[in-house]
Every structure is written in C-alpha cells, then in structure tokens.
Image 1 (tube, rainbow, N blue to C red):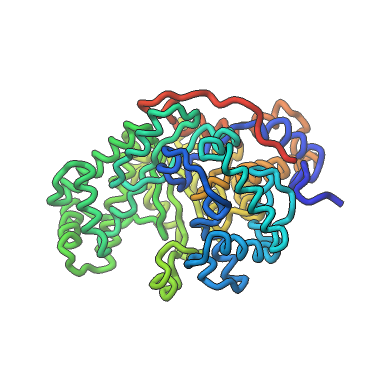
Image 2 (image 1 turned 90 degrees about the vertical axis):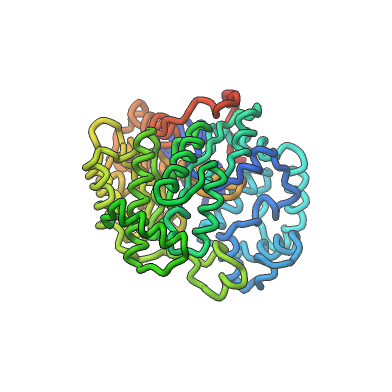
Amino acid sequence: MRAFLDNNFLLSNDSSQRLYHQYAAAQPILDYHCHLPPEDIAGNRRFANLYEIWLEGDHYKWRAMRGNGIAERYVTGDASPYEKFLAWARTVPYTLRNPLYHWTHLELQRYFGITDLLDEHSAPAIWERASAELAHELTVHGILRKFRVDVVCTTDDPTDDLRHHREIAKSQLATRVFPAFRPDKALAIHSAEFGPWVEKLSKAADIEIKNLGTFLDALRKRHDDFHGLGSRLSDHGLEYCFATPCSDATAAAIFDKGRNRKPMSEAETTQFASFMMLFFARLDAEKGWTKQLHLGALRNVNSGARQVIGPDTGYDTIADFPQIRPLAAYLDLLARENALPRMILYNNNPNDTFAFATLIGCFQDGLVPGRIQYGSAWWFLDQKEGITAQLNALSNVGLLSRFIGMVTDSRSFMSYPRHEYFRRILCDIIGQDVTRGELPDNDAVLRRLVEDVCYGNARSYLNLPEAPPPGPSVKISGPVAELS
C-alpha cells in the first residue's frame, strides 16, 4: 500500500514516475491566467497567518464549509481569522475524495513542510508552524521564487490605472508580471452599473465619452496602455458567446439607451454584446494578442445569499447553455474578415468537453501551431477527473503535443501546487499508455511532449515580452520544490 502524498503521488507506474521526476518537475511555471492582486505583488505582501494566505476569498473552501454545516459567521462573517481557520480544519476530514483534500495537504507540504493531516486536533500546531514560516521567507516574492514562477498574468479591468503593474515593472522581481485585459463590464449595457463604469473608463483613458465612437476610442486607448505594459492576453467570462449581427448604427442607438438608463430588450443587449465582442477580437488580432473565453458558468444563483453576502462568494454552478453554435458563429465571423486572434476556449460543463475539443480544429490556420487552443480544465472541472477528461478529449480529436498547459485561475498565492497536480496527472496518463504499449518507451519522444505541455508551448505561443516594460527582469534559477 502506498503512503498518502508520497514522492510518487498520482504516478502509478515506473514510466509515469520517470517522466514526472526527470522532465516535468523541473519546468518553471508560466501562469498565464490568474486573479492574483497586483497590489500584493507590488508591495511584496507578507501574510500574517494561514487565514490571510489560504482562506481569505477562497470560495472553494467556503462551499465545502457550508456543506459541512459551518455557520456563515465562520465562513465570510465576523469571526476571527483563527476561528475561521479552525472551522476549515474541522471541515477538511469531510473533504475526502474532493480535490480540496489533495490540494490542502499538498499545499501544507510544499509551503511549510507540514506532513500532518489537518483536522481540529492538529490545527493549533499547524497554525503556529505556518505562521512562523510566513513571518520569514514566504512573502509574495519569496513564494514566486520558491515555486520558480517565470510569468504571472493577472486579470485587470480596463478602468484600472495599472500603477501596481508599473511598480512591479520597475522592481527587481525576477518573475515577469503582466496585466491581462478583462473588459466584460463593457458588454453589460443593461446593468445599473454601466453608467458609472463608463465614467471610470473616461477618466482612466482621459477621453470624454459622449457616444459609441468615443466609448470605443477610450477602450482602444486602454488596450494600448495595457499593451505598453506587456499585456498580450485578454479574457472574457461569459455564460455563452455572442454572435448576433449588429450594425454600427444599431450599436450606437443601444449605447445611447444604456447611457441614459432607458429600458431595452434582451435582443438589444445581445446585439450590443455581440458588437463589442467583435470589436475586442479585432483589437486583439491587430496586436497579436491571445483572447481567452471562459464559458458556461451560471453565477450567483442564490439570490438571498447574494443580497446578504454579496456576489462571487461561492454560489455559482455549472450551466447548461447551448455553447457550440454561437461560439462557432463568432469564430466564423472573425475568420471571414481575417480578424481571428489566437484564442483559448475554456468550458465549464463536462457535456461540452468533446464539442470544444473538436471545434478548435475547425479554425486552425496552418500557420501558427495550435492557434486555437482548448483550454485547461476550468473551475468545477479543475480536478483529477476533469483534467483527465480534457487531456483525453484533446488527445483523441486534436494535438495534445501543442497544448499550452495549466493555469491556476486562482486568487490565492497558495495555489501553485496545482501546476504540480496537473503535471503528475499528465505524466501518469502518458506513462500508462507506455506501460500498455500504446506509446513508445522512448524518452527522446516523450520528453519533448512533457516539457512542451508543462511550459515550452505556452512560452512560444503567447508572445510575451522577455521583460515587463519598463522594468528589468532576472532569470529564475535553482531547483524546483520537491516532495518531502
């Protein structure tokens, strides 16, 4: 019987173990999509305790705690950080077979060298030991060094002044840190927050927004500003893609309605969103950016909880929106006008896995390897089964060898072991094929596949600057964090 989280965790045979330890483990991390706060990186934040670095804002843990009967006071309420940590510790033994059980203990090992199982009895000692470690080397910059993080791409609103990114660019931080453009609020013409957001955009771009034309000018200016700080990615989080035809004149009329808080139909909101999605894709294509589409989440479904606690607090679910027809129409519109940027498509519903994996093959251009990517397993699919399904679907109907690999998609600086988790699953899938004679036992062939998917493909595909302008960059070196 194997020990829990031993050196060969998730690696079921000799081939898997060799591929991981010799080739995958040593690769740097290129985290091209996350939600880490740029201000924490700029300020080299030092976390006071495990609550701050581990539980603050983590809706995965919040959902599990609620499911375990933990009162909201100990989840997002006014309980002390230590009380909230104890509530989480009481929940952990009930997360067996949930990925949180793996992640929790993997993170305790990799960050603090703690191999004890977390429960209410071990919690006080683990709290003290982790807090002591956090007081020394494990600042934000220390964590980035420890896990050999080569690149971090944050997720930023067009109205952000990007001052934290400018501070990072001027620092001596070895990790390259770039903003990524997330303009979803520009689509929300029906929202009461649209008008105030447009005013913020106007100030950020220093352009008076009077109509649709000046609105687009302001967004283009901010896109330019992001590019100047090294941004080469944009991102949208949508229920489904929009591809309803909309003329300039129609979009202008709908924009005026939205600015003046006049009622509009659902058809009009869809038309405007479609118009804007084409506009943003053209901007990305002009500059050689990569567009990410995260599709298929139904957000904030518990209206009572949203009213009391607020949005984005763990009350989201997998949606069953039809995805492929509107997404295919969107890609086709862009391809017809030669304005299709590099694109990464993420699905949240497992029923769409093979559909997404096949759709990307319809819009490859024969010039850029893997121009349209099927993104890594996302959100509710970011676990062993979901990762395996994504890798198998891509292998069966696409080119796994051109896949650009894993992202953390996290707000937590404790999430870097998720790259290790992914790499172990990847190597085990390949190793099992080797053991069954379905792939050659040839390291010259397999090494390239493993190293490219873990790091090399993303590095060559994303066209990221070698340094965050205008700051210097230092090459990361040193051994990867190993299993205890």
